[in-house]
Length: 315
Ligand code: MN
Image (cartoon, rainbow, N blue to C red; front, top):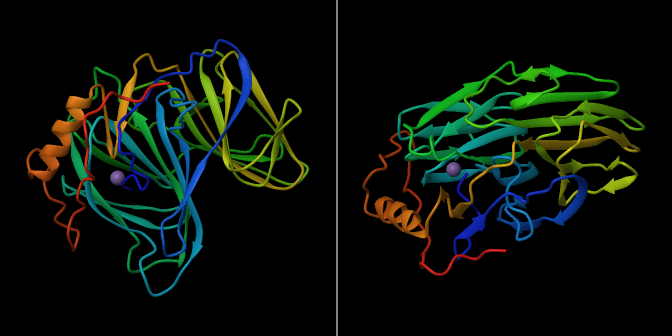
């Protein structure tokens, strides 16, 4: 997707630097995008901006529709990141400037590595289930990889396991010895969790990593603390495991990874290190340089919002 809540200024994002286990709950922002599609932004937030290499976390839906495209995001550019498209229901068709096509469906990951630059579109396909509910996440690429050649990958058969009363689907990185095996450039985890009513889900974690939970639906308790939907629950580091307890059935997403050792700058659909790089990428897109066209998309491409180079907002 294209960032649906653009900021006028670039945001500087860096690791929280937690050295212990804690629970910090930061309220998410939500926006109505029209057509009944609500997007909730859990990252970046002013108080906390990276969890491992994860720098952006939006979820949208659930939405039921008929006779129209629930999602229709025209071609737009990305640099310096990977987009992770993971659906709970529905379908999203990806087309990009390399000529790749990929259909994201529940349990099937669309992973786009932007590197030095790529453009893509994402839309509801003509044959669809009339439902849409899912995630758009971004992973920041480390300095040594952020100018690499762009790529697109589609993955099926990602690892699923069912510890106790729960259901765990690993879509990026590694959790409890289960590896997604996707194209990855930093140590990380991204996993969908489902727990039945009056359930318990125990998961081992890497204590050197930081982690966060976003509750999509229902409610969970961790260490006696209630974790509600509509927030990002940052869990810190030095956790050897999680024991999640549910009263009602719950649906959540776990992200984490080794604390990212670099501050990144985020604006619109770009992840960079300086405002000048952002300005250059914006000018390249508007000037039709560097980024090729998405030939499979019928329609106009997105225009970049205005960008003014200002002192970058920091914490
Ligand atoms: Mn996009």
